[in-house]
Image (tube, rainbow, N blue to C red; front, side):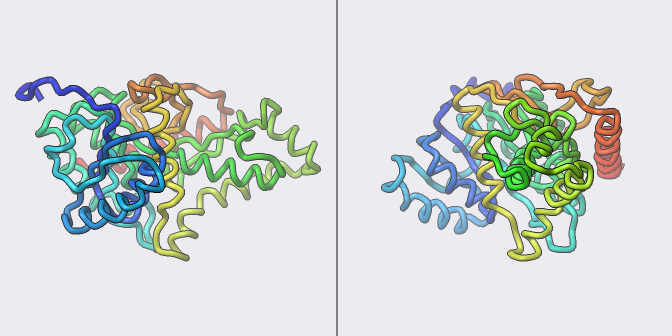
Length: 321
């Protein structure tokens, strides 16, 4: 980066690298959002990127003016957010961690290209397994940890809120709960701190006529954890939910909202965990990940979080063995 002049960031410019289902749907969601005035699409298949850019740009008369085009890595040096969705798709019989070797190689090549041009924006990693790939992107890029963020469990948390809202018969926006840890099979539903508009979850359950809390919450957590597998089995891929989650993260950054979102970030000692990337509630603003929000966890939840971290650390060690 020292070989490049200081680039002034264009806050209204975004780049999407990878134009598969997730990348193209994310680009579509961002076009509708009004957050940006310029968007670059990059893909190994140039025709695919050009086709998606054309198709999405034809919708701008029904949204807001926006320049959308297929470009190269040279075009993204001043982008405020660089969204990376490039990677192999998760197959019906694969876990997110099964993708690790294929997608680690892809991520390394993408980050190396980005860093050639001294990009100064925030990297938002969406490719799976997102925790591992965010860790790799952070290490390869050498960027400050606040500028490399994974989409983490933002979508999982949305799914949890949706399931709890349906169970309780309340507006999902009034439900406050987080999925933390790995975006994957070892994720944790942090029910201990969950509430509906400040009222503890178990109290709300009883107000609504539900008393078998442990069984009900276990069932909801399993439904959330298996949501992606169910969707992939039925329609081969998930993309609408994650595109809305990415849009939400971008909104918090562009508008400097200081919103608390469970993104994948490098932990700095919280709950005794260091040098590992996983999802914890994090303050998201113009500076990216601006600080972690240590929600209260029960002893069981803390053990589960450490177990989740150990699984990810083992995968990282195997990659670098």
